[in-house]
Amino acid sequence: MILRTSLLLALLGATGVALADDAAILACRKLADGAARLGCYDAIPAAARPAAAAAQAFGLEQKTPEEPARSIESTIVGTVAGWGPATLFTLANGQVWKVVDGSSADLAPVSNPPVKIVRNMFGTLFLEIEGTNASPKVRRVR
Image (cartoon, rainbow, N blue to C red; front, side):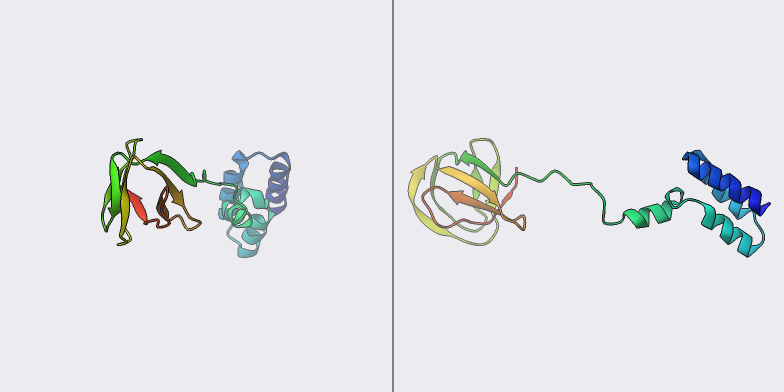
């Protein structure tokens, strides 16, 4: 019986019949003798064992999520004379960004200044207003 089951499992494993994997596991479960059951499970190819296959592939997954854009460019609608905590900026592309770092700055008033929203390596977003050295941390609200 054990030899026949082992041969069946080896044959199915060699042909790559995936449907036999469940049948092989069920056949092993039916064996009353512990040593025979263990031998039966050991005869199942590793690729047919879901847990073993997952463990062998751990860390090798090729799922790479699409990396978000590093920056966008637009202009601020209207005149900008600076910002403070919670200031909202509406961009020409329709997006609305809020200052979230508590920073503030006074600028010479400028109309429709070009801006760039830049994502750093940690994912934090900063608003760069052309002609200034300060860049507040921002979060998109719309």
